[in-house]
Length: 115
Image (cartoon, rainbow, N blue to C red; front, side, top):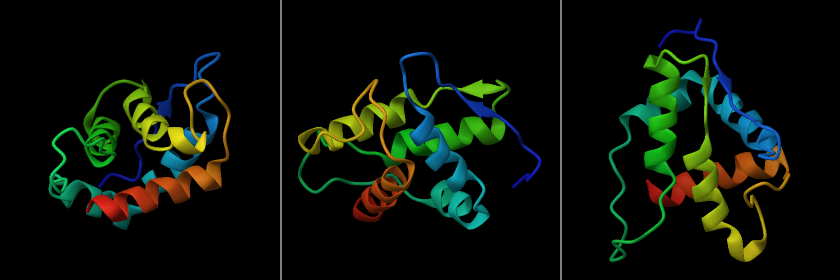
C-alpha cells in the first residue's frame, strides 16, 4: 500500500467532523490496519438483516482514500453509522463535537464485534 497518499477528510462548517477525521487518519496511517480492513469479509449480522454496520462504509472510505482521485473525501457514511449506533448514549451525533480518542475506541470496538 502506498505510503505517499495524502488526502483530506471533509469537515464543512457545522459538520464538526474533526474528532472523527482524526480517528480515521490515525487508522489510515497503520498499514496493518489498512491491510486487515481491506481483507475483511463482509459481516453477516446474526439474524438482523437491517443491522447497522460500520465495516462496509469504512472499507469504502479507505478504498476511496487508496484508489480515488479526489483530494478531499467525505466521511459522511461512517459518521452516520456511528451516530446511529451510539444514539442511545448521546455520542457521535451528527453536527455535534465529540472526543477523538473515544471515537477511535468506538470504531475499534464496533469493528471487533462485526468481524
